[in-house]
Length: 263
Length: 337
Image (tube, rainbow over all chains, first blue to last red; front, side):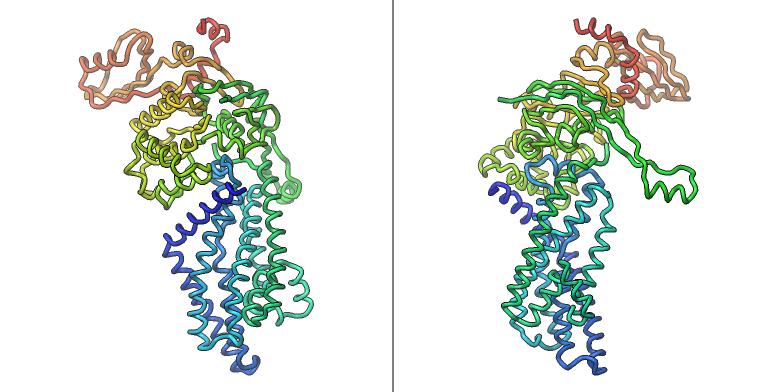
């Protein structure tokens, strides 16, 4: 166990190094984050000016988006890497190692994820303050959301890898990812908090992991409530366990099913 | 104690989905909703054994079943039926344990991190195989010297030539001192010099450490320079399992010579030499090296014509397989004596 953890740790470090090495990609992500926040800050300002939102709520809505986009933009596309390795047959190398292919991919993904989250957290603060000119109504929430956001990103990564393992059957896992992504945006409340949704849709969303992955951390950032943070953390840990078991089960079945491509 | 490879009645069947051919749209829809599968038998109950320290060439033309076999032996593919023991383990059931005992090199794939120097991948693999720092440093120093890759360690892998990268790939596979080294087309795409270097390195490494080598290739040169025993496979069935010397006397004794000359025609009349093709200023010959050495043919050509270019090649693997097909089994028994 410790032996495996040391090995996975090495993949984590190497992935983080590779992330730093690709400065262009980090800068691109930074710029995209800024553009998204700029567009929505203008929309919320217009809505607020029309009197449809109470004063101060537009600022909080933008800080909510800062948090949800921070998580979404930090998650690496490991499902595509898994799919690519299956398509090209490179998975052959990984399968002959004494460590698990999917957990290698997970730890590699964590190396990318946590480094991106560190960089984009700074970017989020910068853009948030620049575009709203104010802190959220309870600024301590921004500190509280850091561990919750890291956990949400980690759980999302596990689900992404489950989608990637789908390529063991389908070869192309993109359709599964599109469905996941769109559901995450809608039922996770990427742009708008779920509390603004119709009641029935809120109930549906709370039955899925999506509400915990984006809306939960967004609420923690705005409400700065320790009890809420603990509640969201417990839900995330639960979904994390589900995702981890699902990943391992899918991988085991996938290995028996896999036909490595190429001669 | 080191153990080799034992394969008993290994069978592998792939199921592939059949596509509708020249069909109406509703038939295509029906086929889509209720797909039909076709079975492709990649391996027909093959059996063989490899002793520890042996160097085996597993050869055959494209699609013969070489890579499927190596993938089953390495634990990547699950067989349809049959028994396999590699270093005393069942590969697909004990893959993690097996990982410590085998090394793999796939000529058409890479295990090195593309954007990072090879040295980084080596350090990562040291963690994967749980090598302590000193053991890893000593082993790496040894392999770096043997494979002459000191200057390559700090270069990003994407900047390496194919030959340089392949040397690094083999080093990566040997770091944990595997008992068995599986090499799947390790020289594919390499130039003549790089091929010779890789073959010599694999051979000398196996001699030095007693590593069992299981090499698949469709290049007869690989088996001649590296291995002592040859298994020929075609259409998923074993054709021949013999020492290299036996096969060499019967089959691996021909070379294809291509001469480009200033003269339009080239006429040679030597025993063991057969003309294959003639074009103006170019002629292709097959020489039986048991009867006539290649250098004698070349010196004869130099006397008769102004030589502009010369190529020496092995006959295609398909020709070798065809020849083996046509040879009665009794011949091999005689040759073995």
